[in-house]
Length: 287
Image (tube, rainbow, N blue to C red; front, side, top):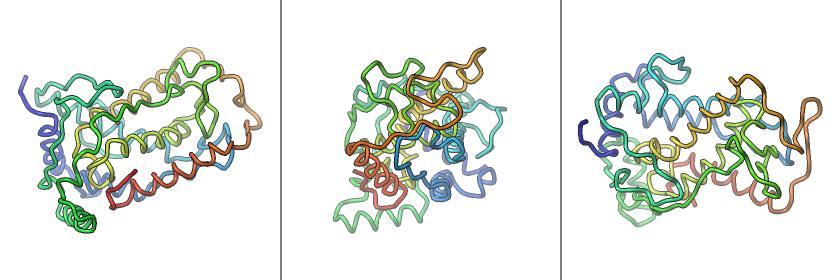
C-alpha cells in the first residue's frame, strides 16, 4: 500500500474531485459543502418533546445521504447529492490504506493529525479566514488549528441499536431511546445533526465552519465516519425481517407522544440553535 498521511490524502482527493465539479453544480468540494449547508439550514427544534418531530423534514435524510456520499458510498450506489467517488472509494482506487478507526473517546491519533495549510482552500475562503484572523488578532494558521485533540465526545447511546438503559434520558426532541425508535431517516438526521454540531465545535479549528471543516481529516475519518455508521445501522434495521418495537413512552402510531420540556431541555434547545447558526457562519469561533 502507498504511504500517505490522511491530511495529504484528503487534500489530494479534493484536488481530484475538483475535476468533477460538474457533479455538484460546478463548485469545488469546499464551496459545495458550504453552499449545501447554507441552502439546507439545520431545522429549528420543537418547543416540546414530540415523537413525530422531524419525520417529514427532508433535511434529515438529505444531511445523512450527502455526508454518506462524501465519506464512503460505494461506486455505483444510487447518489442524490453528488456523482463522484466517495473518499473511501477513492482511497481504494488509489491503493491507499485507510487509517485505523478512531475511538472517539481516545485522543485523536497521529494518523489523523492536522497541520493547517491554507493553500488547499479556494481564494474566497482563504480571504474570509484571513479576515476572521485579523479581527481576532491571530494568525490564519492558529485559527484553523484544532483547539482540542482529545474531545472525549461520542454520539449518545440512543443512536445505537441497543439504546439507553433504564433511567437514562432518551433523545431530547423525540424521546427516542434506541436507533429503531426513529421513525424515518428524516427524523434520525434532524436529531443527530445537533450532537454532530457539538462534536465539530469540541474539536474546533477548521472544523468550526462548514467553509473549512473538510480540510481536517477528522471530518471524514472521525466525526462523519461515526455518523455514517449510525446511518448504515439504521438502514439495516429498516431492511430487517421484522420491525423493532418502539421503546416504552414513544408513539406507536396515531397521536404523537408530546410532553413539555424541562428547564434543562429548554436551555439545551437554545444552545443547539446557537451552535447551528455559528457552525454555518464564517466566524470560525464555535464554542
